[in-house]
Each structure stands twice: as structure tokens, then as C-alpha cells.
Length: 371
Image 1 (cartoon, one colour):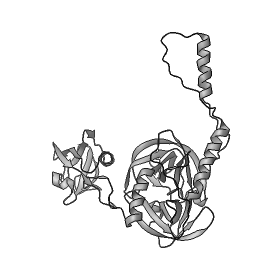
Image 2: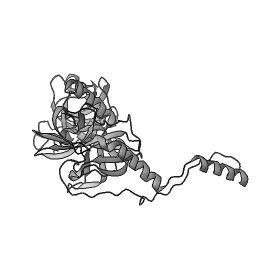
Image 3: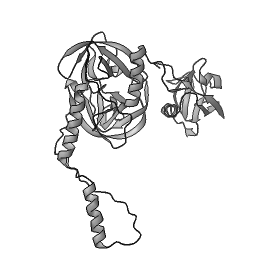
Image 4: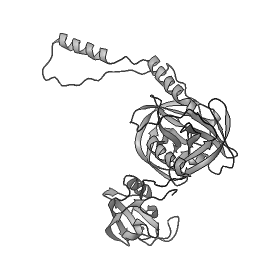
């Protein structure tokens, strides 16, 4: 179960320094068919060593410090007075700051503290709850805007810069553990292309910057994974909204005050997990028929009027078991399948209705803004 990085909780700090004990072993291609002489092999090895610069703890420290110094002035402290604190990233020099929607949720007063210590009143320019993003605005110009990367790569070294537990301008270090994760937030919104990172993310990091070593922002940290059962944070499993999505959403909000085009596939159903005992008119997945009694999948609770699902003939009580060949075992699987699709795409949806399997062709729409 994911958890936002906004509420206050205990956390520790990471120390960056020469304590990073990294052993480096060069990799060579193995193409020779016949053995080379010792002299030739030695000459090639010398050339390879000369071409690859030595990696030392000092050089790693320097790269981390340079990335931090290039970015930290663009990360601000966001105080949603009376509700909680988080972080934000300066999007442009004209006072626009991007953060998480949940950081400014329910706000009546917002104060932003710049890296210089200057405190400014902020107003909400627009929010996008579907992406958990918001743009707030301060009356200031000449602000140090962050540079946003076009993409990120697995195993890429990254820094998480923000204000965990109110500790301003804090930094942690890790790597990108995975890309294109589909994660559902506590609000019900889901992130279709989330970045997974091992850089420790703690309460207050929400809305801050996930930064590559070239100083460019690759994502906005938003939540941490929690362990099953007790709700405690999992070790070094955090998620960030990718910078490409951040830029797309922020530009729309700045221009129009809202997101006008989500670019996300839309089916138009609300669904739960279909399994034994569900879909029979009781419990959290009530509203369907008996089709979910012994079928595993995503049981359709409601179908929106005029939606792609309604036009294709999907009904309340159907259990969706597949989308375009992907097996659907739960509502999370359905979210994943939709995250991999795009508006206007026609997909095959397999489902079980009252014990009978069938396949429907559905042309997906575009998710309405703020859903």
C-alpha cells in the first residue's frame, strides 16, 4: 500500500562522503576467436585502462555535490499552514512552482521559503489530482528555475532533494530502481509511468526534486511504498512522477489554470477485485450480479453513461479478465493495462458475464481532467 511522503514520521539522514566504498571492474567484449599473444593482450588492456577514467570515492563525491549545488536553489519549502509541509520545484523564473496536489490540498494559506531564506505568500494556480500535481505562484521574478530532463534510465544515480520532516534542503542518494511502474495513491489516483527509486524519500519530500548527476530534474517524489499489514514504509522503495509528465501538466496549468488534455486512456468504469464472495450484492464490491462469485478479475461496479465501456456494451457486474491479451486478475491489473494504452486505441476486452466468457471491442477515450 503506497503512502504519501507528506505526513510527519520518523526518519534518518544519509551521509554522503568517501564512505561510499565502490569497487570498479571494467567490462570487456569477448570477440577474439584465436588466442592473442601476451604482448598484444597487454597493449589492448593498457589502451582500455587509458580510455576509461578512474572512478574514485572523491570523484563520486564531487559529482554528487555538483548536482546538489546546481539544483538546490530551485527547491523550495512549502508550508500548507495548518495542514502540513512539503517541497516544491521552481518551474520558471516568473514565480511558478510545481509541487504535489496533496501537498497543497485543503490549503487556505500557503507560504513558500526559498533556499535563500526569503518567505513568500503563494496562491494555487491550478491542480491536477489525477497526476497528483499542482502549480503554485509567488509574486517574484528572476527565480532560479530548475532544468527538467526528457527521460531517465534504470540504475541511473539520483539525488532526492527536499524538506523531509521540515529539514530544509536535505539530500539523499540512490539510483533509479525501475521505470513505468503503475502505482495507485491513497487518494485513488494512479500514476501510470512512475519512477521507482532507492533514494530515501521521507515525509516532507513530496513535491521536491529527484535529480540526476547532471543537475537536471528527472522526477517529482510523491510517495513511498509501505509494507503489507502494518503500514510502515518499505526500505528504499519510493516513487516519483516523471519529469516529462510534470512538464506537460505544469505547462497546461500555467497557460489555462487547469489540465485540458490528459493524454491518458479512458475506459469509463469503476472496478474492484472480483473473486469468491464478491460481486454478489454485498461487501465493498456490491452492485454487480453473481458473475464474480468464482471468477478472478476486475469486477465492474459502475459504468459511466456515454463512456467507451458503455458504448461497447460492458455492464455492471461483468468481470474483466483480459485486455489485449494481458491477463486481468485484479483492479490494479486493469489500471496497468489502461496505463499501457492510449486514447483512440481499440482494444479487445475479455470478460465473464453470468458464467459466460465473451470478448468486446472497445475504442478507448481520453481520461477527463481531474479524474
